[in-house]
Amino acid sequence: MKETEAKAYIYLKSRLRQRQRLYDFALTDYVCSSLVLSVLKHENEALSNAEKRASDEVHSLSERGQRLQASLGTIQSAKEVREIMGRSGQNLDWILNEI
Image (cartoon, rainbow, N blue to C red; front, side, top):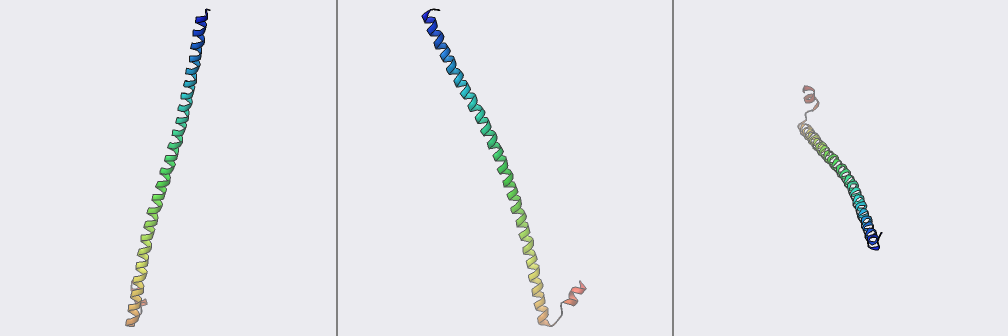
């Protein structure tokens, strides 16, 4: 092999190694990016599910609060009726028995 051919061969082999390293780096970067994307998708799904559960819990607590408010209103009305009946001298028991 002539000296010029040897130099060209060494140069081309060096360039081939550089290209291989770039390819390996790009492949590693792609694999890492794919893994990161997969993790981010999983985290997004987990957060979405947690948000849905929290929303459902808030809705449930709101309904429960409304039922408690209605119960308190009923209790307050019953107290007011007892007070009125007590002032008028009538017993509330006979009304309850009629119902």
